[in-house]
Image (tube, rainbow, N blue to C red; front, side, top):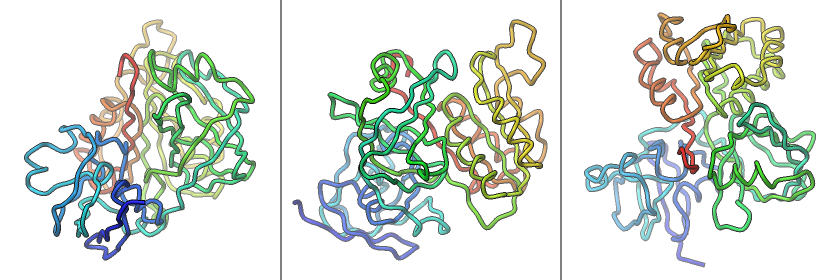
Length: 345
């Protein structure tokens, strides 16, 4: 066991103990402190913070797009890659007081594959059943890490369901050529196989206690966490105005259409707007264009709206830039930016 150090987070006044071989983010999560984060791989910058006191810390490899060299020299850090070697005081630059103390314990679990079916030509619906333990608590919108068999690597995927009351977890996973896990899923995973997961992680969760309208923008496997949030709203009878803009290339890239139309019936103030960027066959009667362009032309004033964005990095980056220009408070834009490891990633 390595030495432990105290890390204090300001301005919230919360302290955690962190072992030197842990990242600060992981240690906080294990102690029920839900800090803002995204990829956990030093690529997205969601957990960027500033070191107020102490300087003896080291970082695992990260992208300089997430933390440029000049910021690192000024004292900024990425909590998902930082290891402390002395007591530290850290200023959180991006945090949510509603959630920071509401973290769930991180657990490891063995699951058995129930089904692995196509939902589009390049996305799978994976359903697994918990074996040990038999329950894993999570908030709708969160994700778990899957261990990639035969490697020391993990890959993160969001749950599409809302709880493990029936003992299962559901995922929507895009298959990338050369993807370490997704290609394995595409070619080898069969019902009955066992996999190892760890979680939950993520802060892409519905902020309750508000009646603000909701705007969801998604693409690709970003369907999973947004579907989880919408299913949770229907289960709990959340009656907030909500619109889900989902972008796909062609109609064969759409999925869960029937369920989303049913959710329009269950949630009277919910509207589902799929859009195709390549509607070449002429049979498509819905919205066309990049999904951010569809939002731009369809929404003129989004003041007071809570926005949730999830999907491929280019779509997320475009949406995060667009939404404040349409009136969304930057602090009310919540997003998950998926990263890929395949040939096209």
